[in-house]
Length: 197
Image (cartoon, rainbow, N blue to C red; front, side, top):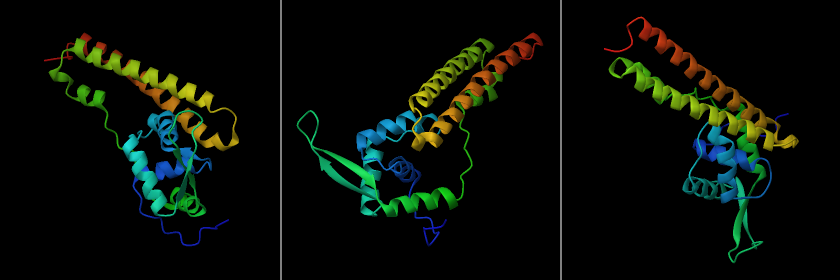
């Protein structure tokens, strides 16, 4: 079914598409909600935008007609809060983007790998510290992804975001396992007398 008409993908930055994607679950969200949800999902596999980026994109989306907002009375406190909802135009735009925009290949900027690359300049003990810290980070992130996937519950609307969290869990498990393998490889190099000059 193609109800979008023109398949031209609107020009938005990645943050705009991410925010629109969060709104595509068709719930009203405040900027705080968008930030919280991005921290619990996007932050595990892409990046988590700052509050200023979230609010800037919400304004941009509203200006373009992809979202609308309204003020709601607070449940507690004294300030009204602004909540945003995706429009039909916004849903059509994010659907077009998801279906037809060129896919950017992942860019690997891996600090521990860069340090390993110049490992001939670093003592083996320091490389072990770096890789052990990376292993601990990866395991922490794996557990976080596992918890967030479980917390997503059985809500059918969250089936694909939950799968993405499972992917993140598997990714960080593989990073943990790769760090273990590299630690073993350093031990092997050191045993062969090739570890550091």
